[in-house]
Image (cartoon, rainbow, N blue to C red; front, side):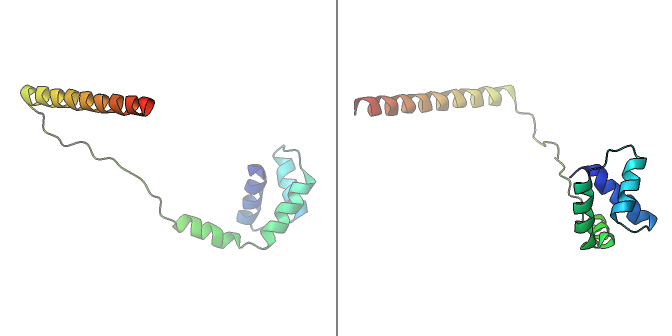
Length: 110
């Protein structure tokens, strides 16, 4: 459904006007929108079973969730600690590579 039709419906609601096909067409035409009769009829039929005021009230009452990321609070490591850590990571990756190779060869040669 085109959002313009929804906006027109909300405008009619806010103005206190009846939401019917004629009024909806007038609003859309005033906005320079080419009216699709099928969309107008389906929207008016759908809106009749909805309490727009209640929907708007509920949507305004819903809390907005936001996610904030806290800055990292790590202390800078000394250059020796960094070097040791890098060496450990290299060694671990070497071990993983050797394990992966041996598993690969084992699968090839059974």
